[in-house]
Length: 394
Image (tube, rainbow, N blue to C red; front, side, top):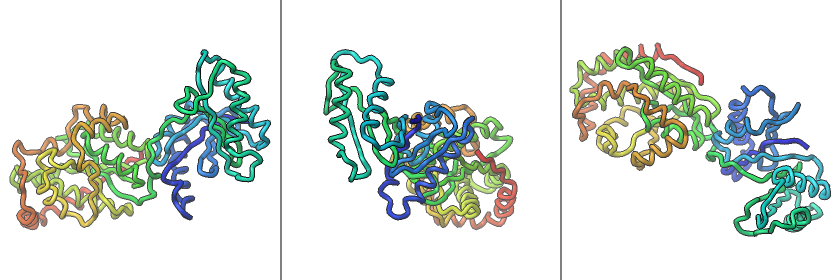
């Protein structure tokens, strides 16, 4: 018998013959999150579950839980005990031992329920019989407690798979699909609240994202860069790792400042960002760009502005926050741990160069015509920015 962490997944379970690919990607992401612990953990596939334990000593499930439950694809995690014996009298005694160890004293009137599953339908007892036998044994030793079929105070789970698993709680995970199972893309990551949330949401759908940040020294400080690196680090907890591409953007912005009307600056900056994002996406094998746009939230996110921006790239632009209001986005940012980082008072390049009265109803044809007139000067600046990118593995 040993302690372990039982990992449950949701959508992966309904995949067909290629389910093992999703499982392997989930294992790889978990492995990245736990490999820096002091002990070597074994991750085992177990009939619709994953099991993590220390082969050479006691498993520290408390250290594993916060690192595993946040990984995309994990529906929940359960601290459990494992035994490789399927003999029912042994399992019944183990269940009682687990119950006593975890609930040594119970007040009068406490309720419990036993939940049983068996993978082998030829097992001598069916699930209801297993439940009844273990429940009766617990009542013998705890005559002052009661069985409740609805909303019990304590739930005891007994799962008979290749091994026997006994546990009493499931800590909720983030769910979704493992990172990379839906392909690759890039996230245009600013220092604001929205873009990290957008990255989290698309990452949850299985897209492995590289982050792209546009840095404009001396107009943006090193503290602004540190903030974005911390945001990328926080996002990396969910995927098992992430790359941050920092693009030097100062020369491009100064060129736009000299050649574009102030009210159109934001539109042109976003178009150049998409062009650079597409080049980086091509380099990493990506097929989409993710942005934090929320329709109507700011001037550059009106429908006309969005239309005037997106023709700069041939890649699909994913905007998971398009229908969200600000408070909904803030709530998610709190949940995923990015909010407090995002509100640090260090401005990004868009904030520094934005006009007081940006255009809200740009015409795409006019934007494209102006861009064609200044593109000859922009191309070498874009190429130089791409050459000077710094990549941080987080």
